Image 1: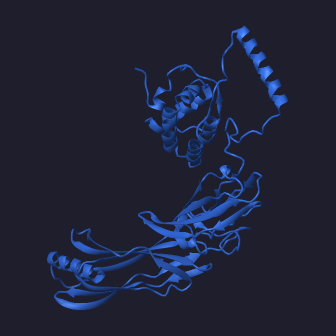
Image 2: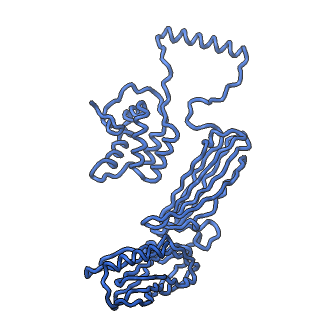
Length: 422
């Protein structure tokens, strides 16, 4: 199929390009390495080679002959691209593009030998085979000089990438588990500027009191205009074996930021197994039956307290406890960690419409109201205002509130929940 597409493309080109003798400069092939942070790569760090050819004469057949790439592992990213391009003199030509990712095995000064594009062309009506060579490329590979880490360390895993993100999900939530029940944990790691084979093996998740059953690991490389994105998904089935609350520690994934040339860390967050969901008003477990004497005393006390309240004319009930749902709190915290003010604002807007009592309570708190004002200016303002401290604002919004807010103190934040005064 590939040959058929090339032939159809060439036939179209033959209809538009006049037959002419090949001249110097009509055939050009270049190889351009993309260096992360404009610095020499370390061992096992990906370098993209962009191979580009520009050809004036019509092409009948083609074949790319790649050098041996000694001292490098390599993989081609995607298919070859063919297109028409216009040259500075106004004439049209055929453009060829290929992207190859190479990974040096060790430090040193290396040379990437020429790529050869063997073309069968129409040279003034004559079928001619020519070899178009790219210039050799010098590619020095740096040595790791810091005292710890680096590409040669056995532990931790060496992960050079432009960015790393981690998504952690449980079904059901681990805090709800009782002894013998199971939950499935799925962790997804995405790394920009890396292929899937460069992602670490499944992290070890082990602690006292739980049974873990590791599931399959899936890996994929997603090709984007900005380069490849590697994705790995790990899963476990987790079952508590004891009735105690079991803390599950965070798992740190160190990685090398190829843009800033510094070591960083991504985190699989800590969780708690058992013990019930946090921030609940009451424990839903049934109470142990009390003795008849205790029940009688409690009844008399309640009756007496009722008479006192009636005598004082106070029949009020305990104010409700207002708190955001756990998924909303998690979404706010995630947007804060990522520094995404727009996503933070989107989650908050839905929460304010769903929880008008909370929205009124926030308006009555000057510190929270000021943070929401700053958030709105950053997201919707035209002056490029800096967002507030999203992590601090997320913590403030996640705190439960006691009391009943009968009406908003003022309407200065009405725009935040999408409801203005009428």
